[in-house]
Length: 286
Image 1 (tube, rainbow, N blue to C red):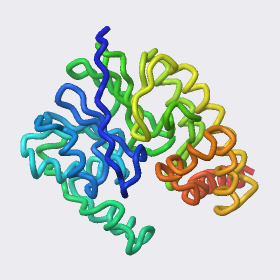
Image 2 (spheres, rainbow, N blue to C red):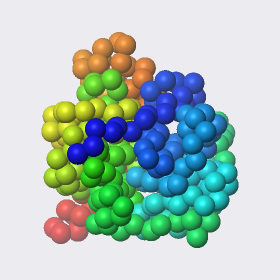
Image 3 (cartoon, one colour):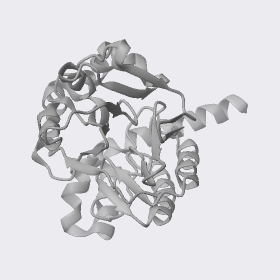
Image 4 (cartoon, rainbow, N blue to C red):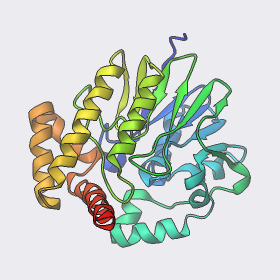
């Protein structure tokens, strides 16, 4: 097994360190981040030209820069799950929906979402083994989420499945709508664990070595905690609960970075939607 680890490029999103980080490994960019931080990403490449962009999912903080990168590097191959591919080729509906949520802040947060030409897209379904990379379909955070495992280095690139983890701190589940599904998420965590990775690479933030089992177990526990909390509160109450949860585990120093990586006010709605769907199914079966 290779000792090589990816280089994390701090994208300094909105000027915040360790909120978002792309990973660079052997000509591959894993989750390039938002278009608004693409210049920072290019600086981090240090003049090297990428061959592929591997997207764990199509949320703007992970995938928004893909089209802009293809403009600069026309031969760039973009890997994406089949449920997200059409939105990378034509992001019109995705952007219109997001603008309803973010309003005037959209451009500041995410920049311009450039379409990716269809010929640059490599559609994934999960289960592929390509040039030493293994791909697994890993829903729960998003229905278009995959994780990647580089077999020679033993590094798993997990997007948001293994959560937000800053400087070895607690695993915080990012739970925005619309696709949050804790049972599917737990199964995806088990998929990552089955690879027995020696290291986990996080978009939020960095690479941790040697404690994958502990990290994954922590995410299982945190996901259950967050799901239970969401059943008995609202958006602001959940934000206060998460703030206290982070303070207890990461202290005052960790709080601003965790918040920058996943603003707490946005994390209730995904779980609330999940519980409403559970109740609807239960009522339909009654």
